[in-house]
Image 1 (cartoon, one colour):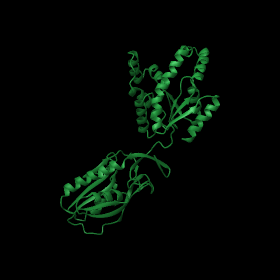
Image 2 (cartoon, rainbow, N blue to C red):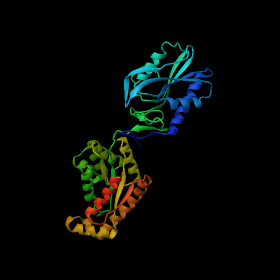
Image 3 (tube, rainbow, N blue to C red):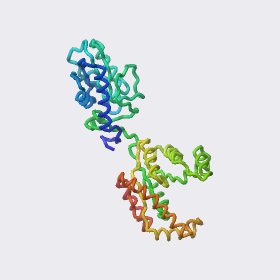
Image 4 (cartoon, rainbow, N blue to C red):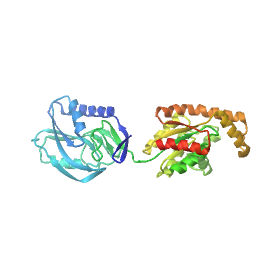
Length: 369
């Protein structure tokens, strides 16, 4: 993730992918042109990196020139495009290839065609490294396309946001959800996770998504996902991860304007953690931290036995069941601890002491994110 001016951008296309796309285009164009000497025309400012890398890879003699058009103001493609720097050489009878860094609406392309209309070139071809088919509104043929991309704003490799980002060797995509904190909250039985989730939800204005509550809601209300989940449960089978993810996605969609989410009870496996990462990435967001409340086993046992005196839950009244539940928790969290530690997102928090003391420790972690 990078920040340019007031906006955040996430990694989108790597240096290696760009290099491979440029080489592919070089191979295609050189095969088509054969032994003729082409004139490659770069559109400034954005194409300078692309043109430089392209001609360095081009295996035969060629000429290079540039024209400059004002085509962007901030994030929006301007309808008012002017020719600022024109051609200084005679191109009549020459093969000309326009090397564009990106084609979206096609407004710049219209102006390029206007410029070359009276140049009497032998052949005019258009090559673009990045192409947004969803945004393209013109009928001009694009002869060579490096990488098709969705209609989202990008920076890097010559492309900028208000002057910044052109120097980046990779390409980054605008993160449309700019400010969101998403937590995976873990804690063994008796750690006080439910209590702390309420405090965190209120303090940071987050939405608490408990997988258990989501399942119960969907089944009780006989939603399509709830009925699907119930069909597996009635057969004694595990509910597929995708069904759970679809339920969580529905909850996230319901709260699209939230400051972030606390995920409670999910993920439980690496596959689920990866699925959750993909879900958040599709929302232009991410999991910021896995926070695990850490409490000594004997304290947990005593807390749960005490709770069992009033809760009426059988699994809070039997010490052997309690110890087995704690053991199962560690089995599951150990895998996820490694997963999130590898991303530098695991935070163990001392879960012993008063409720207020634990809350302060959790707040300190979240405030540091």
